[in-house]
Figure 1 (cartoon, rainbow, N blue to C red):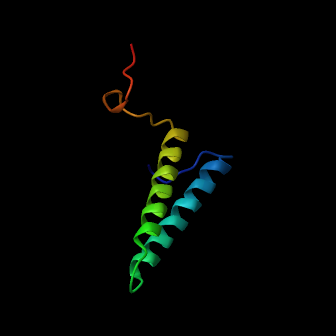
Figure 2 (figure 1 turned 30 degrees about the horizontal axis):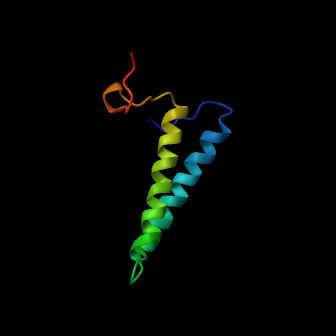
Figure 3 (figure 1 turned 90 degrees about the vertical axis):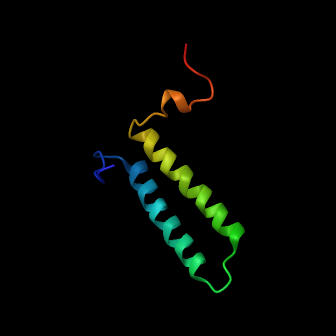
Length: 72
């Protein structure tokens, strides 16, 4: 990912913003004296979902070897 967004991609822009927010929240939680591990796991899952959505919008499909159901 080179950081460039196609024109008019408001969803992609929102995902980029959400990803940055999630990374900031995860870092803030980890820097606490006693971090909430459940919150970190939840935020990490959300971050991974945002990354997956961005990859799907950019046309990056899951490799054939990683799919559950192989294509015929």
